[in-house]
Image (cartoon, rainbow, N blue to C red; front, side, top):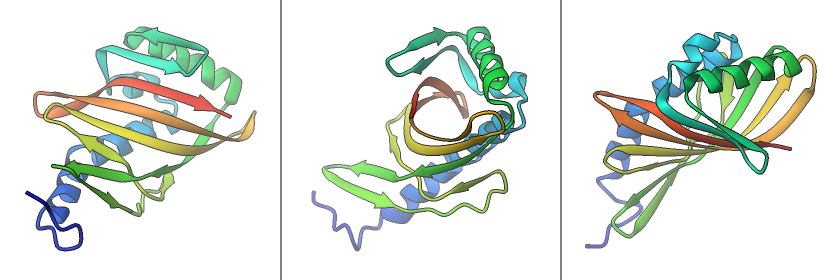
Length: 162
């Protein structure tokens, strides 16, 4: 079966499904990080989650991730994010790409990138964060969210900051 990219009946349901499954959770997670509510932010992670700074170090588990957040807040101070995402759905052998603009107050989301399977949503992002102590920094992140019951939890997060 070959799907027509321009006239696919699956295009809108896929966008709606991705946004309804992960976007609200991701926005709440970002808001908790920006407000430095570390207990709230860490609650979005799976109990067995890993947080990896590409090429540097990684930690495992909610408590270790919380400690990394605390260290980050000491070094950076208060932060705000601009996040750029691109949604990509793989349906059969076709790839669909969508740009979505957010009206969230805490960040300017330009686009989103998701890849979905039955139990996982993968989110790739480029971001810009502005901190009171370090100024503007740009980076990339990969997040893997795992389905747990009726919701998703952050299972693996890998990032780099330039």
